[in-house]
Length: 249
Image 1 (cartoon, rainbow, N blue to C red):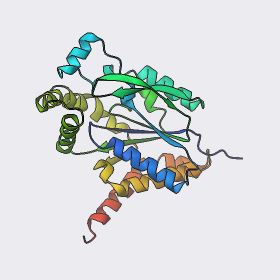
Image 2 (cartoon, rainbow, N blue to C red):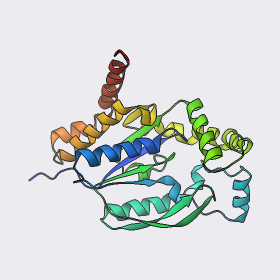
Image 3 (cartoon, rainbow, N blue to C red):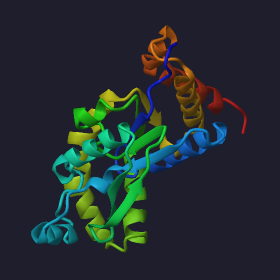
Image 4 (cartoon, rainbow, N blue to C red):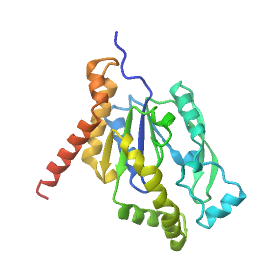
């Protein structure tokens, strides 16, 4: 008897700062839970939970907008892979809750094992140990000007940071780190999602594709074709997007 796709099924969602990764993740979870009638448990983990704890010197740098939160060295990838391995083995885990306003961890949250586990963050494809866990890899591709505008609104409005500090941090750290570390990981994506969470056509197609994968027996020719169909799925998304754009409004 053939086994179905091995659970948990890990999905990685990468992309630049304020590209819409969290919205894409939320919409995928909402649609999967709705269409599956909650038969599948779906959870998400954010890379921010795995920021390294700052010593006093680095905390002062962070408050001055000089600490590079977008550099790979800012993250504890060993901790993340250990967490994913435990979830993969069916164990519950505790991970830090990160407070961006304080640049610090603020307690722990318990994560239970699930059928589908989505990991989102700017550098979730950077470490090959983590990247290799993903059965599907998505890159959210949003215009740089839109991402900057969203980040300014978020950091100034939600985190009460001075505009000058936000812009300084963006030009000094965020933009260079995106170009050096995040953007190159786009090549690992199975599917690139333009316009992020606003692209409901792409998200609906992705959810259907994920459902098909979860229903397909492991080891079957259909599954092997599906797992190799990232480019084809992306072509389908692009075709649907063009067709939608051509409809009268």
